[in-house]
Image (cartoon, rainbow, N blue to C red):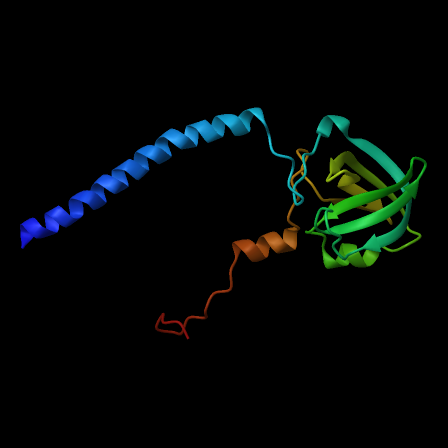
Length: 169
């Protein structure tokens, strides 16, 4: 009986080892090809070039909260300024309080970098100043920043209340 189990396992083990060897050989080859040909930036985090950062001052023409196909996800502002109208990407982590403060006709100053995503130019806002407020949306390297209130919610998940004897209710 034991001999029969071993003979059935031998082809299985040989197949697994062959698969592992194949994976070891192919992964480094595919990694080398992607390093020489980088993929285009994803919509949720386009490449952010801090060296190209600029200040753009204008007036909000429209607040766009609905997602358009091909554009980075999140809140956008259409802002008219000296350099024309810009599509300003604020990201997905804009607080409700900030969203409610943004409206058409509001003067705004934006610090960010212009990037092209799917053939369309966007000003990726790192910081915006409006109504006497300064709101930071991205780190200096371009990563979206989670608002302070959302960070607390992520760190402190809801826990069950404990009864006097230590058991969860």
